[in-house]
Image (cartoon, rainbow, N blue to C red; front, side, top):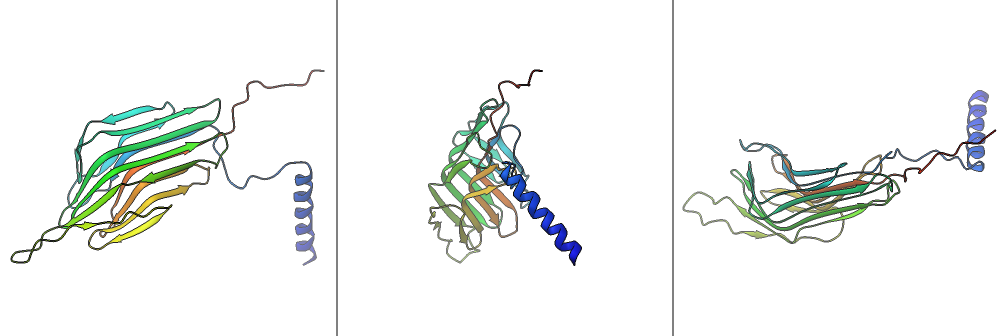
Length: 228
């Protein structure tokens, strides 16, 4: 018991000494350089349809804009421009990312179709690990279930009320759940923003509009060494 108390006391003394000297253990790991990634859509394989990798995908470094005029792959059909952009300054320690598409149709076999407009995700990271901010938005979302067998009447489209705020979950019968403006920060202080993270009733995940960024301390211009 005395040994345990002694060790604990030594640890407290070291911690106090470190604080007095201005040396504080970091609460989390952090980037050694800024980074960013953005893409408009990704989807796991479902109903016999192929998976959709992050598309179009831009990363920093080196950064830049990746775009597609349209997309028709797996369960995803996009008839508007898809744009993913990343940028950063390695010396300044800053980074940014954005992803956008005006209209997208997600078709799930034997379930229905989700029509989404105004998809956008942004992320901005200053030269301070863990200080990134961003937002994800969806303008409208309408789910149309697969028509039931005749002679039953066709299913009525469901207009989904898109909530405001961060990490807002909406449950849509027959479809699954949608997390709007999903935001998660990892252990390195990188923020990932998703306009909509959809988990289907079968467990598959579909992401619409993803922007990730993380800053770092500015690079030192020069190292100063004492002279003797």
